[in-house]
Amino acid sequence: MRAYFEELAGFLESRAKASEVVISRLSAEDSEFIRFNVSRVRQATAVRQASWSLTLIEGTRRIDASVSLAGRADADRETLAGLLEALRAGIADVPEDPFLLVETNPVASESERRGKLPDPGQVIDEVLAAGRGLDLVGFHAQGPICKGFSSSLGVRHWHAVESFSFGWCLYHGRDKAVKTTYAGNAWESAAFEAKMRFAREQLARLGEKPRELEPGAYRAFLAPTAMEEILGMLSWAGFGLKSRNTKQSALIRMADQDARLSPLVTIRENTRDGIASGFQAEGFVRPPDVALVESGRLATPLVSPRSAREYGVATNGANAGETPESLDLAAGSLAQDEALAALGTGIYVGNLWYLNFSDRSACRLTGMTRFASFWVENGRIQAPLNVMRFDDTAYRILGANLEALTRERDLLPSSSSYGERSTESVRTPGALVRELALTL
Image (cartoon, rainbow, N blue to C red; front, side, top):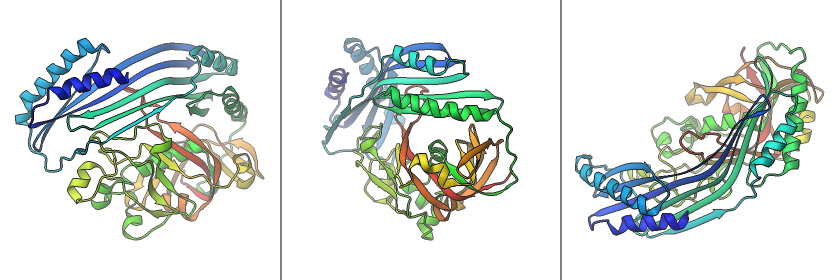
């Protein structure tokens, strides 16, 4: 795939005029998808695709277009040559962009991360065996993803990564289910079996009489899948320079009033250990690591090229939305198998959903508990919980009320495959909090 990319990129750059900048971006995948329902295979398919995004720049005018390719260089050269001519025909009608900024230094980077992916048949055999007699619903995706960038200014980047992600639910009935994710770059049968065993143990408890809770503040343990939802809300216009400077950031009190989270909280954009590429759409290289929150204090913002031009600062390779693509919450010291004992009496929250801001400027979040959440007494699960709504601030959940984070962390890739497999991911521990406010 890389040789194919280099050939087509070189072809387009050779056609660039002296007054033009021609930028090419390749996004390709060779993926296996398996869907399960009622512990049966409902779909097993492979998708091999490549899309090419072409950008033409003249002065401060920019025009973009994308096309799906056949994967044959001889046919695709003609397609891309026609696309370039179409962009030339339209660029005079595009307004000038005062904040246009692309990489002009002839930099290069490459990254290839091989994985140990299972044969799809192995996945099917292990999942069906583990789900025998259960109502298992799941989606498995795996395979290599490639990203390429080139420009007629001499910029070259290449990224190839192999990974897998399997997300599944063991369904009990109505709103009761156990949701689990197993992901990485090397499938280990023992690790999958351990996650499935824990999910089956939770499923067995869902048939018991639910515990009814009154609204109030409860001691809680938030599993990594619940933490992913909270971190996702913080990522929504929380870490970008643009949102900070326009006072739209959910973390504006940290920026303007020196509000802080717990010293246990260190959040990074960890490109080095994530799945996403180490470069972005304008060709700028991302640092291996950007500290977004350091020991509870707001640190470096994500700066896109447009914000860099607008505010006169350097970009750090952020995407256009200035949102993390490889978010990483540092581990703590609590052993995961000791989490219930440390919780003592309170609620175990397996998952959250329907999150939104109830007061964005105060970083107040509201949402619903989901799937397997339980009432715990003296470190032991006593009963499942009915769905409850919470309403609390990140300054309490990850600040004053945070007691511990687990040593173990889960890698939770985005399950989005709309158009193409996403390379975004969150790596997070579970969290023990002194109080979580349930409102109904």
